[in-house]
Image (tube, rainbow, N blue to C red; front, top):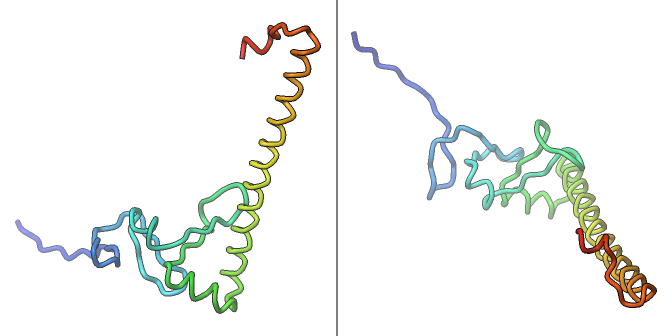
Length: 127
């Protein structure tokens, strides 16, 4: 016996792509759907937490993201972008602290080296 089955599949809305999508990334503003690969260049993902991602994350296509940033009237988009800015500030702070710590650690290493009359510290050789 033969049956004809009609199925509906989601396809990427990027014209040059059009592939079937298993993981949908619809824009929260206009609803355009991007595949996993196209979302990296065609949109922006905003995580819903400082340290974590998953259910609750937002996805906006580049056009809507730019428009909503310019208008500044969408409260939810503003909250996601604010959280993104905080994440960026934290990352920059951590990098800055690591650089400062490295400088101080180098000073301590040099002072200990000089204090011991130029002898290598046994603990430093094991690292």
